[in-house]
Every structure is written in structure tokens, then in C-alpha cells.
Length: 256
Ligand code: 13P
Image 1 (cartoon, rainbow, N blue to C red):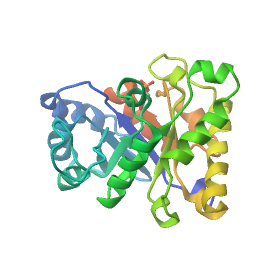
Image 2 (spheres, rainbow, N blue to C red):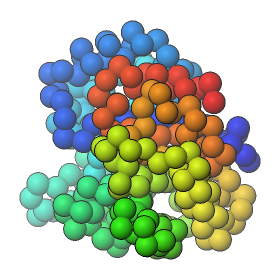
Image 3 (cartoon, protein in one colour):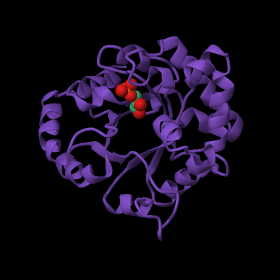
């Protein structure tokens, strides 16, 4: 299986932006972008309270709804937490885990990301597991070893069958929200390395089938070049997913 046989996935990450009441108008603007290509999987990962409104808006379209986090616990006395079963019950298809903002502001470890990943798999939701280095780590030349440790930690105890349902997103922290995109070569180098790590863990054939996304200041202008790289199968889009420009990125994935 090579890049051509891997379906592209363009996922938006709204982070803590927008309101449920703004969802219908947002979706109208996106639909009128008219580039919501059939051959590309796409999803919008929204804050928990917006999931029902987004489900309703996207009904009948091929765009899926995603969440941005999940509890590692099944149920019980965990005030403020949201379980994987609750997300599945709302019809959520994807869930981001291990985003660098959660790792930085909520002290999420690879062990916790691993537990969340397993909770999602148990509920039939596709995890989008994030990894990526700081600028200091890049400058120190430890990008590849750091990302490898995040991948191995996050996937500990995950079987080959389960791995077929996991999406990986490489998001260099220095490129997130900064307007400073990784060059296509930088992004390809790490995404290709990640596929190599997966090949060591699960075998080359399985690794070739895993969707690996790039995230970090991806937009309508730079998407095509990034998506043309052999190991970049899609994007995790922050700021640009809040605008009709998101449809342009889906369009770029379809042309790639
Ligand atoms: P930006 O596209 O705003 O840089 O955010 C990327 C990101 O963090 C997606 O998860």
C-alpha cells in the first residue's frame, strides 16, 4: 500500500473557539466553498458542547464530527470529564488526543495519552494521536528521537489490529499558530521517520496503511505542497479550519 491507496484525511481542530449558535452559518460558508471533495475524508473536531450542533449541521454530508479530548476512564466520579462512550453515543467518529496544548497546559504524559487512545478504540472512535517537538528540541537535534519516544509511549500495548484504526498527527510545536509552517522537507522527514517507527513496531505492510497527518499553520496556500509529500496523508488544521478556507485545503487534498 502506498500513498495513492491511503485515503487523505483533513481534520479541523477548532480548539476553544466559536459557539454552538455559530455552527449553522459556519457550515453554510464552508459548503458554498464547494470543494468538499468526495475522495477525501474530512472531520471537524469541535469543543464538546458544539458536537450536537455540528452533527446536525453536517447530516447528509461526508464531513465527520470529532472531539478534541476524552477521559481515560470509562465512567464514575471524575467531575468534568467526558467518556469515550459518551462521545460515541453522540455519533463522534474521531477524537484528537495528546495535542501539544494539552500536554503543555494539562501535563498530559505519554502514559495518559496511551490510556485515552485505548478508551477511544474500545468505543469505536478513531484516535488522532498528536506528537511533535519544541523549537528547543529541534535546535538541539533531538526531534526524531523525541517524536519516536512519543509514538512508542502512546502506542504501548496497542495491537496490530488496533493500530489499523489509529491516525497519527505530527505537529511541530513551533509551527502551531505561529504562521511559521514547517517546510515540506522538514514535515516529510519526520512523517517518513514516524512511518519507519511504525514499520519497526508493526511491520512495513501495516505501516504503509497508517494515515499520518501534518499540522502547524497549514492553510489554503501551503497545503498542496505539504500534502504532495510521500508520507503526509492529510492535515490537522487549527486557525484555517475556522474559515471557509478549510474547504480549499480539502480541495488541495483531492487534487494531490
Ligand atoms: P494552526 O493550524 O492554527 O497552526 O494549529 C495547528 C494545530 O494545533 C492543529 O491541531
